[in-house]
Amino acid sequence: MDKHLKMIPVSKIFSDVHYEVPIYQRNYAWGSDQIEQLIEDIKSSKDDYFLGNLIVNQKDNNLYEVIDGQQRLTTLFLLERYLGITFANDALRFEARDKANRTLATLPNTNQLTDELQSSEIKVGYKIIDDYFEKTGLKAEKEKIIKRLEKVNLIRVQVPAKIDLNHYFEIMNTRGEQLELHEIAKAYILAKISSPEAKKIASDIWEYCSNMDSYIQMNYPKKQRDKIFSNDWSSLSDRIVDFDSLIGCYQNEAVMEERFTLEEILQGKGMTSGASPSNGESENERFESIISFPNFLLQVNEAITRSNADDDASLDDKNFLTSLQHNWANEVSAKRFLFTMLKARVFFDKFILKREYARDYKETGKWSLQRLEKYRDVKGDKPKYVGTFGGDEDNRNKQIRTLQSALRITYTSPKTMHWISLVLSSYINDENADILDILENYAQSKVDESGYETTSGFGFERIVFSYLDYLIYRDGYSFNENEIIRPLADDWQFQFRSSIEHFYPQHPTELSSWDDEDLNCFGNLALITVSGNSTFNNAMPVGKASTNPGIIAQSLKLKIMTAMMRQNDNIWDQKLAHKHQDEMFKILESKKGELG
Image (cartoon, rainbow, N blue to C red; front, side, top):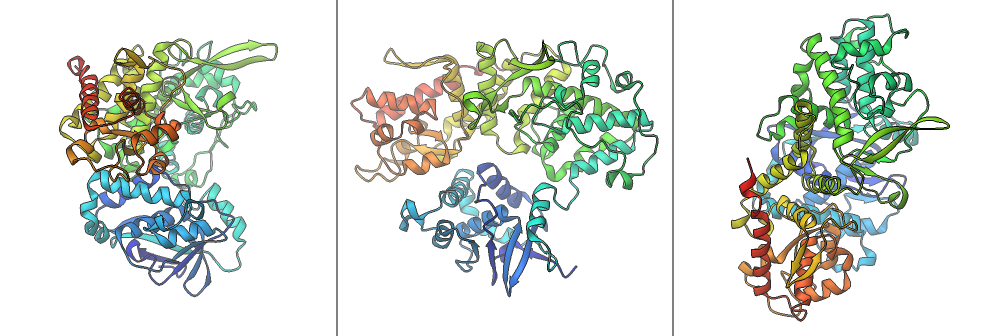
């Protein structure tokens, strides 16, 4: 191996070595999505497994400045601390960030530090790991995971001496040195396209679909947009029925005459320059897709071949090229996949929710389910966005948007987002599909499969809490003839929640502890954000409700529990918890007979 490259088992990555994260890099920022995916990759890997690169600059003997890979490295530090692997407290340090360093050095005993002295990001990251091991039952398999880390490797890459590190850091963060897997897939597929005209069309489909944060119509230049899409831009034109029907949209245009080898395509020859519209139109970063382009490719592939069973391997990026390779078997299959990708992207933009950053939500964002339509003013044709199923506040639009957001915050790993391919497959086969009924049945089936009736504590799956909150949002809820939750309320939306909270605490500081059967019953539990769980700590229910109304509002179930407690003289007891459990289970059971 090159002297600048060293393969290191993750179990030894902090042994007799010190890493420093320079001040120009951002703070630790990984959340539950990335942390849980990393643990899942480690847990599910077989034999020797490559976890990625760690780019460093050696400053001294056994002292390395981290140029790229600090988020993964910090997470591995937290994981190994949680597992009890021994290494120096200062094996990882952040330049000029005392809070982060103090928190890392005191793990897992951060309670000895006041909040003002701790890094909340590091503390939350550690808690995500703790919660994940608890809820998945991995806590009993720590030794097995430690043993697995001996077979999981990082490649530590030493940058050349005297390099401009600032420039190198920018390159790593904007492009990276490795060719992306989706670029390799693109090269293979385009290599199967024979004519210059068809190759140009294929390249455009790929490039314009790859910009996931704007609607596909706006990625195309206007001269193609008006031909490919319907008069109001909301769907594909009736004339566009397959790949070859797109050729007429490119008539009288200069196209590449050269033929390129696979190697030349991988080097970027013969490609369009990017996915930005050539007429300069822009959507000003208003929308954000809930999945990346590589995952979209896997979703399209699964939508084409979808069966009734969810197969996580089909959406796992570790199997990316293997999953897609049948699409470049020949020119026919390549054209079929490219056209289906374009069609699916139109459906994705219209029928799958996005995050929207505009007006009152310009900074925080909100869930958005809107279709693009054309309107004309004195300056010409422009896009407008209206609720996909009626107006933005139409009840059906609100229901589907909220149900999709429930699924989005529940299945956070890209390889588990099978509901997206279910939507795409449904519309590919029937453009009049009843997606609300399809998704409600899908979510209900996942709830039923979880076995929630015989579960307790951290064993409850997230979908049980999320789908329940959706049903409460949809239908509203009253207790003792008092309306607690108004149906389809405009002032509530799902947040990214992953932490199970005990309303009556596990370790109360004031009163006696509950028996396990009472403490861990569903009626005493709610799903909230990790930061909310950390804030609640071991406070009593009345204290949680009075001092943290914003956290209570994260969960409609928790709002109901709070209202029940207040109607019971601010007392939350075992009888009330079990009564609440019975009523919530009745709500979850209400749709079972409708599945078909």
